[in-house]
Length: 131
Image 1: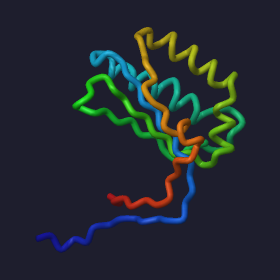
Image 2 (image 1 turned 135 degrees about the vertical axis):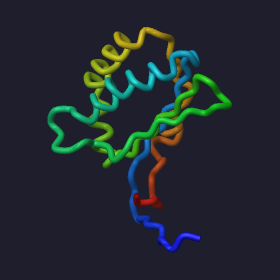
Image 3 (image 1 turned 90 degrees about the horizontal axis):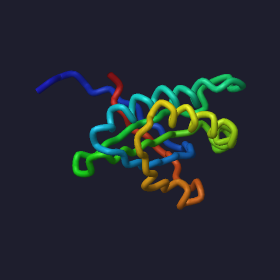
Image 4 (image 1 turned 90 degrees about the vertical axis):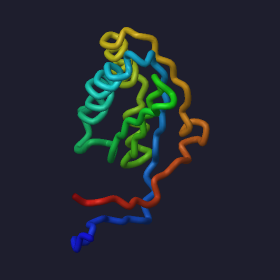
């Protein structure tokens, strides 16, 4: 038995908007999708001019071994205002055009639960290990 106490943080009282997108691509293109998504969307939205900081707290990419080709993206945004600012149509159109140019394969948007809930999904507490 280890005598080292685990280190962790626990925070509550947050009300951070969460965006969830579920995509489907051919299983053989998953790794390419993830790489291009990071280079175009993640870095594109993170490094937008006019922001004094990255407008989201985190972005995670999940896959499900039982559903080959399905990719779930989750963003925790700093605020709904930041999210909406990044969602400006001209910004999104430019990023989508770059993504389409670099990822020529079929992509299907399977679900966007945040839209179904009218942006009602929020991070309200968090427990995480500190390494």
